[in-house]
Length: 322
DNA sequence: CGCATTTGACCGGCGC
DNA sequence: GCGCCGGTCAAATGCG
Image 1 (tube, helix red, strand yellow):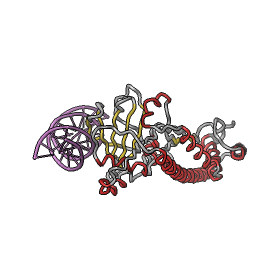
Image 2: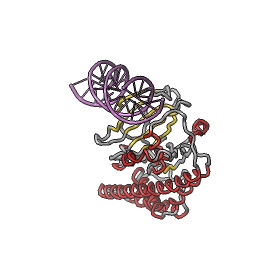
Image 3: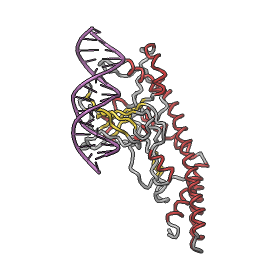
Image 4: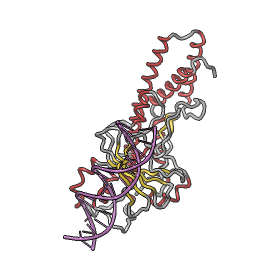
């Protein structure tokens, strides 16, 4: 089965207008407002010294770190939810269409393992369940566990002929091949960010809709995403779930927002991707509700979010009134 | 000149 | 064993 229809927009635009669409409860809103007014009064009375600015910088950095940690916890919770959902789906979906063309045994083995793939991108990837080749797969299991495979579908412009998927990592192309099933060439990439990183990526346009790029990731990065590095160092505010390639199927360039764009859909893609998608939109809705619930129920998250917003406004516009 | 990309050759797995 | 096929290598080429 395929989860590519799950288009969950989980954006935390921390740097946008605080009154513009931020979903906070009343308590959090009041807290943010009081923080803003307090800072405004304080700053209108006296000119802050450089020492105060340094202290504020440290405080903001600490908050940033705290938010990053909370984000990590949130991602772990999401993975746990996804695993439960995968189990649920595997129980309900017993059969999956198979192409009649001959396939390598390792391929079927890999597909068998996708259900247990602890990778967000597995949501969007093929999770074909064929248990008939299990015996022949035994000798491959260990390496399969190491080399996790996920598939990502990326909508591109029709005029864009490049086989590049911007996922925050650095890739070096080492080969290109025209495969039998698809007339479009398949490009082979290795992660070049770290020499020891074993991750490989295959990018090929969909045979059905050539505006869709299919990126297949193999393995796990043993280094942080470059976007994450920049985010943690404060040079950019664009964060992606770098350890989960599929989570960044629709990535944005660095911009003034903290974005967890797990997957964004274009309604027009539904028809094309429906073949490998789950049928029930309720499942995706359920997942979104679970994530939203876990966030809103966490007082630490709401408090830290309010503090981060107030701190950022102080830092950006120390004398500006609103 | 160094690095990335291109592309044909080569290798190994698989089916017949 | 042979041929097909996907994946990888490495020399050639392009680019900044």
